[in-house]
Length: 420
Image (cartoon, rainbow, N blue to C red; front, side):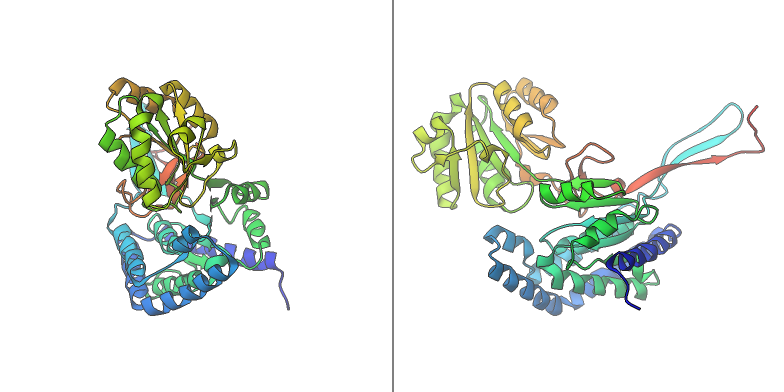
């Protein structure tokens, strides 16, 4: 008998729920053994993974994906090795499940503990980057959660193979193969069906375009946590160190422009623009960056195009940069809070008062001082691989590691107490 897409997704949800309940009883050593098995299986299948990925890259080139998006999609042997090492690193991280948050004893003798426990079943929707498949699966496994992974169609061959490798490694380690499953990307209705699995799926994490996240939220009855777009800013303050500012502003844009923590808008205090802009423009031109600026920027940089209102709100995922000149730090803060996406912002300054003001006034998940926005990352923060960077405020904000994939419960021990 033929089954509908919705019924097929529901079967996956029920299998994930059963696997999640089994994982809740698994100790840390068993999870770590499974993670090591996954890492070894990925390394052993390097040639097959790269071959499958080359099919995806070829299709992406044919469909006109940008150079930056193709970079996000591509897996080389070195990147496969890094993927496996990321899984190994997660195995070495502390297990958050069972952690006692606080405990106390009441006057009536009740002993109360608040402990960390897995969320249960997590659906993860993402685009382009197949390394997310291994990272997300490993993080969910270590935190005791089952995962339903729905990658983008542009990486279908890479993702399908990776999940197959991971599932077989789980089974070989004695854990449920259904703890990490793949939701084929051929039909967008599968996302809607996943979002309707209340009682089976506990949380959906959506990573990708703003439009995709809005669509997932609009059609879901399951809670959705969005890894939204990264319109990240660097503000070069009146009191910035020139060499430090150039180094950071170039790195934040050029080092890897296709990722969410790359800078999209550079803001410069007018006091610094005369010396700063020519230096930066030379660096950007050498790196192939297209500059778009306001009137004062274009007055100093002949190659800069006019920035439109839309530019200030755009995540380019490319070697394109908007540049704005401001007269005060307050103007910079107002611009960022109006046009930013709540992801990552940085101020370059040697003035402690301005640094403190900027960090307190900016409404983003991560606010840096004298550091590149590219450093907002799970591995840099010591979390291991990250599940994403949340740009909302509940239940997690900023880079999400193992602890953010858990919730809490109260464990109460009595000796016969009753409510009087």
